[in-house]
Amino acid sequence: MNKIVLRIGLLIFFLSVIFFSQRGLQVWEVLLKSFVVFVIVTIMVGVFAIAFMRAIKKNEDEKKAEEMNEEQNEEIKNFPEEISRK
Image (cartoon, one colour):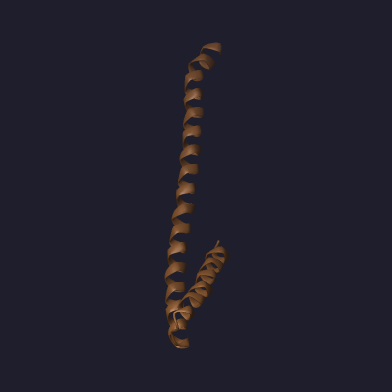
């Protein structure tokens, strides 16, 4: 996941270098502004990826908990029948 976030950030960095150099800025200004854009975009994409992964994990945990509750309810419903059979 980190590689994907970093590569997206680098893509945005190089695109911003092209964008700012087309505006006729000096080299150090282009690099500085592109680096700032890179840092901001990388942090934003990283936070988004973490939030997305947690949401997926939470959803999976809720489904597992529901399935376990259903299984336990079935066992409880069948418990009186098992006692009466003995």
